[in-house]
Image (cartoon, rainbow, N blue to C red; front, side, top):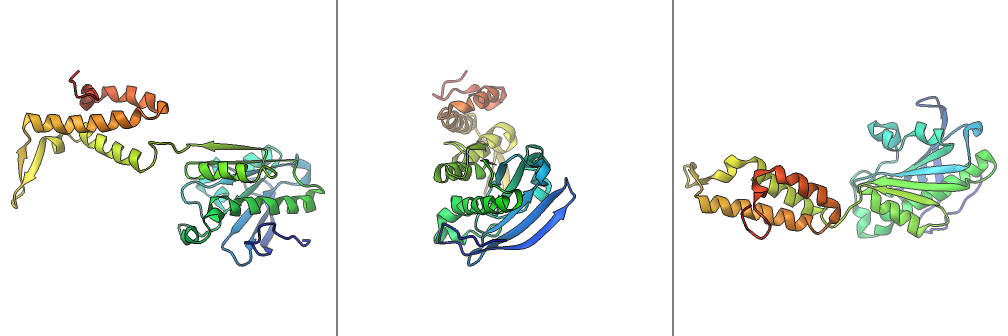
Length: 259
């Protein structure tokens, strides 16, 4: 493999430690490696020349990232080797600059995990593709869901010379992070755990005492107000608001009026 120098000086020289042909799930050339002086690792899955149409796909792992071989595991269907090759493309993966959930890099080089490790892996893949096929890919596309969706957008924004398009999915929004999960938990308590709402434990003996009607009303109203107000901040959650009308506790309007 010919000499290649990373344009991002954070990354050292690329090293390929696995280069072999594999037959599963379809025939492809598998390349694995990384960049010296960093924790960045990559995997490339390249089709035979007669199945290559001059493009690549890059899957950005969701959650925290941290793995460069998800295409070979159960989640491979989200960005599979066979799918990429059926599109005449090779597939790119990286661990996004860190191993599993070790996010210590965020204290020193947060942009490496955000997009730079992914971009540098794609750039190097273009170099290797040019060696194998005689020319670099004409088009590149990046996609990722959940935690990978904002990083997908960053790749496209920060490296428009590498990518022609992006598909972020299961996008984060104003009610999808800690607020959203806490609201869901609170609403679930009100909707499905009537026994917990209707009783409380008092005293060291742990005797269960029914809540008075006004207390139960207050608890139900609190769940409703928080749920509806948080959902109303995002039009995309309208369907959830409509669906929630089936629940008993949502018979109380957000303004506290019984319906």
